Image (cartoon, rainbow, N blue to C red; front, side, top):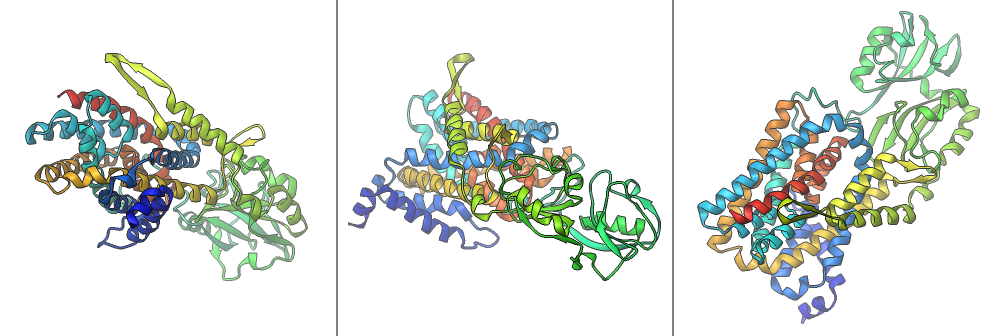
Amino acid sequence: MQLDVLASSPLLTVFLVVALGTAFGAIPFGPLRFGASGALFVGLALGATDPRLGEGLGLLSTLGLGIFVYTVGLAAGSTFFRDLRRQWPLMVVASLALVASAAVAAGAGKLLGFNGAIAAGMYTGSLTSTPALAAAVDAAGNNDPAVGYSLGYPVGVVVAILVVSIMVNKLWDSRRDPASASGAGLFATTVEVERPSWLADIPGWDEQEVRMSYLARGGHTRVVAADDELRPGDQVVVVGPAEAVALVVAHLGREVEHHLADDRRSVDYRRVVVSNRRVAGRTVGSLDIPGRYGGVITRIRRGDADLLAKDDLVLELGDRVLPVVPRDRLKEVRKLLGDSERRVSEVDALTMGFGMALGLLAGLVTIPLPGGIEFSLGSAAGPLVVGMILGGLERSGPVVWGMPHAANLTLRQLGLVLFLAAVGLSSGEDFAARAFSLEGVLIGLSAAAVVIVGALVLFGGAKRLGISAQRTTGAFAGFLGQPAILADANGRAMDDRIDAGYAATFALGMVVKILLVQIIVVL
């Protein structure tokens, strides 16, 4: 009777799976937590009890996945295009890893007696690529790939989460990959000058690795000017990563216990929310705070990360900016930035709706390839690619494409759990039919091997190239095409390179996998 109620109300079923999956995902299994992917496993278990529970969820699955990848694209777009010259070696290594994984899948099929269609499905399942599954089904002319997919999918997710838990916080020589701005942390201190110095001679000043705000001289306090020469007896506030600040202290003199920022009689500061859409999408330098208001922006709070306010840093809606200005100019700066919590809690339905529509439209475009193969981005890669392009543009005239950080994360999480719950419910029956047979065990082991070999090639190649483990972990999630793995990685490390790595390999991985499954099917 209870199942009849659930079968008659798909939305009730989906949200029940979301709730139970969230609770299950929070349970620790040693070092492993399933997190958002708990919805997938609860969906598989519930879907196995009654096939009716997985019917009619295609639209919901597509909607959830589209929202997730579009918001990821918006967040990662500016970083991706700025770092494209740094990303291409990682994209090459990811392609090689996909080829190596495909060789394992084809070899396992030959060795263990799977036909090419099941092997192709297992490959797409272990790498969690629904568009590649569709290509495999079309190439095979039957549903055998779906069987391999349903068995390889949960194994791929579990093995990938284990890989992420081991690798995401690894540190190694990352000479080609500068440290994440979001993970560095900032430190502020007051320095007493003992040796005179022009600002341009201070370590890290020209590179904007440090910022300075308060300057006390002769009993008066003001904001540091770009052309100042610091003199013995001056006191100045230095802001930046701890290592950079330490170099400045050593260059100028000594750190003092009294902090200039505690005296706010003539110079003041406060956190101000960027809610003015005319400001969002512009760089810190373009606001000309020193020239217009005699002040300086030292840092920006974005989500849980404190970012140093470099001149080329692009402001986003919802950023919390810290301007240091003469006390009587603070109100003007607040007006410029907006400072409205209500406005940044809202999603601009116009830009999001138009962006999503463009992404889904791009996904419908079919490109004929040699050999009678047709390729399309689909509802996953289409919104991701368009989101990345719009995120890279930041704004088009008065239209701001980005969205507040908090709103982006909220929509991203909602889209993710809806997608995983729907996929789990839809795959439950096929999974239960073969999961505990000898064939199912062999397919599961083969799926694990596919993921492990791909991870070894990807992480090994990235390490040799001097690419950080954090960017490579994001690329691994994109290589799989699995949003749950990206969410798990972001839950374990605060590093903007993770999203950038995901964006670099997701669409590329989709293309390569669709091409490779055509080959596996006929072997």
